[in-house]
Image 1 (cartoon, rainbow, N blue to C red):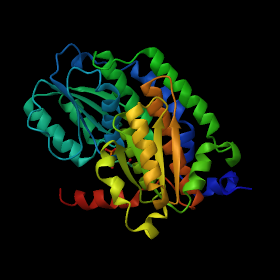
Image 2: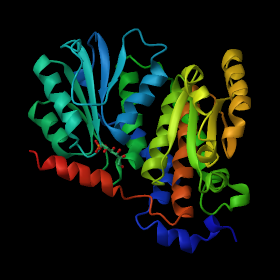
Image 3: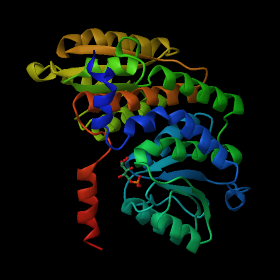
Image 4: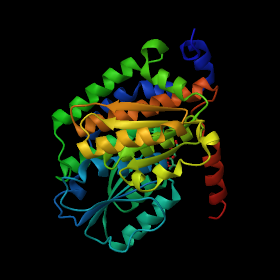
Length: 356
Ligand code: F6R
């Protein structure tokens, strides 16, 4: 029996149930969509915003990355993502500020919110509670309150979908109901294919984890939604599998990283290159990727190409993200690591809290 097909063993390692969270990702999206129906957006609607800025760190910060990548090409106003303590000087009262923090207590996000409040910007809070919820109540602002009890990165459906639906409702995101429903059906299909009950021989997510094995993953995306997704893969390998992981995006990586693989070959021979490939990539990107693979193939233990399919950009983005999310959990379990706890992140936050 293959390691990841020993269900008793993986249940024992996965003490806090991260695999179940991933297996239920489709249900999370359905629940998030249903909950969104009762959100009141009156306070953020009907304004001519100069721009939209997402605030957030880590798992919550990814919401801004992915939403921006999905809507920026059709948006007539700038969509920004701020991951840090300070709000750019050009963000003023005419901007919509969307702070996303699952815990509601992330200090960088709170620092930017305070600056946004001072400048009189409109704020749409997305959180499960904490200080952000209190700030929303105190300032009588619009809030999308999501279900608590998850790790922030495991609550991505609860955080991401309402952000996108809110921007659709206020006329900034051009996403049809057909695209949303199509994306959800795609995730449902994948969740069935990647479920723990499907044995390794037929389960691509388990196979990918086995292929990575003891190697260090390097993930390549392409500028646009696959850049956001490649970064998400890196973060999920870090946080779930507790492994180092690096990422980069085409075409930029062709102007630097491509030559960087020349030295340290005995080290990089223990790296595996994972390339996310949109089935509709244009000829120039296709040529770049195919040529790069040829140029660097001897520097890695292996190169895996992940075909990204879907009937819309949303469907492709969510499904590509999902493959990495669930494979990172299987990789943790393969190595006997509980994917849920992130003790070092908690220690850091505790140290910083002492400064208050
Ligand atoms: C932990 C995780 C982290 C947090 C980050 C910010 O699961 O994903 O990356 O998302 O430390 O915390 P929140 O999301 O509570 O604002």
